[in-house]
Length: 304
View 1 (tube, rainbow, N blue to C red):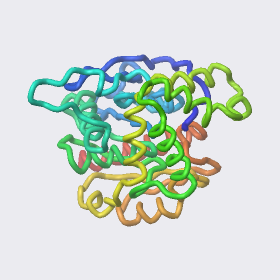
View 2 (spheres, helix red, strand yellow):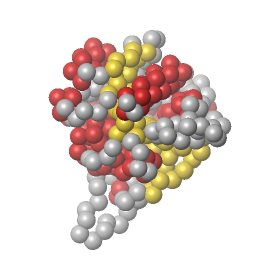
View 3 (cartoon, rainbow, N blue to C red):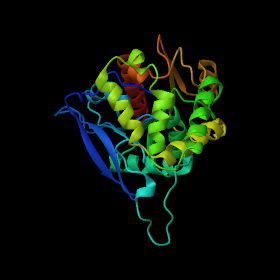
């Protein structure tokens, strides 16, 4: 799981709630300084599996300081965003589920809401990259760019997949109640946490984040993470400026796999030195600089 180093919101960053067609989602909004260029396209950041909007706290202020509004959300059923199953369906309209198409639809609506008629820069971290890709391929929203942050071309493999399969087994075997998340935390995630995460406030947050999430959402998104098809060819044909950004020590999708994907996409490729699967946490200044440079270049090309 992605683990923020701190939880205090920087100046200019505020918690907000975005009303969407299915119900609200919780978000953090970073506002640009007064007097900034209002023409810059805003950005939307999407977290990965078992993550949340807090995974991007270290980026938000520096991304907004150049004059760009930045919003990061909790996906439905994650932490402070209520799950799909908590809403009454509209007659004749089934509720969305937690599969990639439904989550891509939610992200598309977030982009439309944040953009308010302007193109939006979209960033997806890990599983969030698969969701962002779905937004590009199956939903009509105007994007200024797409960044795949430590994400891959299809299903997760290797040791990361083994860990996710363990979570799927634990979620599937337990009673279908929120209590199964407590068992999941105690049996599979809490061991050794004090050594890995010395900050007691962050440890409490990680526990609260998991226990506040939807068991159904965690199960279904894990299943898609393990079975997602490779749609790199389709994405290459989508004609959206794309960047592939990852840590040189990424242990989810391998750096070689992400480099090959970037080549097939004709994408800008940025490798963050000494970082692993979460350069947004491990190297926020390098990551922020790479994003800002890419976004500025995309907007400069669009204005020619």
